Length: 221
Image 1: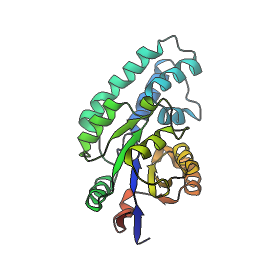
Image 2 (image 1 turned 180 degrees about the vertical axis):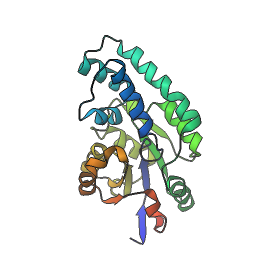
Image 3 (image 1 turned 30 degrees about the vertical axis):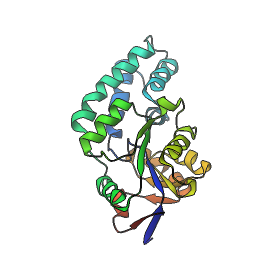
C-alpha cells in the first residue's frame, strides 16, 4: 500500500495509542490473588473490553465477592490514576502517525472504554493533544460490543463512514466497527496474541505495529 486515503480516524486508547494493557493485567490479577481466586480463560477479555464500572460488577458477580461494586470501581480508577499521569508510554509508531495525520489535515478522535480522567491524563502524558474530541463508552451508555461509540464519533467528526478508519487492538471492537461499515485497522497487542489470526480475518488492514504506516502516504478525502 502506497497511499491511505481517509476522511477521519477513530482511535482506541489502551493497547492502541498507549501501551497500558500490561498495567491493567496487573490490576485485574491483583484482585483475584487478594481473594485466592484463579482467573478464567476469558478474564482478560472482560478486563480489556469494558468500562471500569462494568469490570467491578463482573468481578463481584462472577466470583461472588462481598464488595460494593461502586467502591471497587473507585479503587481501580484510583490505582490507575498515577500510571496515566506519570508513567504512560505510547505504542510504537503512535506519535509519528498522529503527527502525520495532523500534517495531512485528517481529523481524528479517541473513542474508548477507559475513564475520561484516564484518557485525558494518559494522552497528555504521551504528548497526544490534537484530537478533535474524546468520547467514552460510559458517556454513550454502551461498550464496544455495540457500535454506538463509533457511530457517535463519526457524527462528531463529520467524516464519511466508509473512509473513516477505526484503529483498535481488540477483536471484539474490530468486529463491531467492521459490521457497522467502518474501515478497520488492527494493531497487534500482546494481550490478544491468541486471537491475532481472528483479528487479521476481520480487519481491512492488520498491522504488527503502527510503525508499518510510516512509509504510507496519508491523504485526506
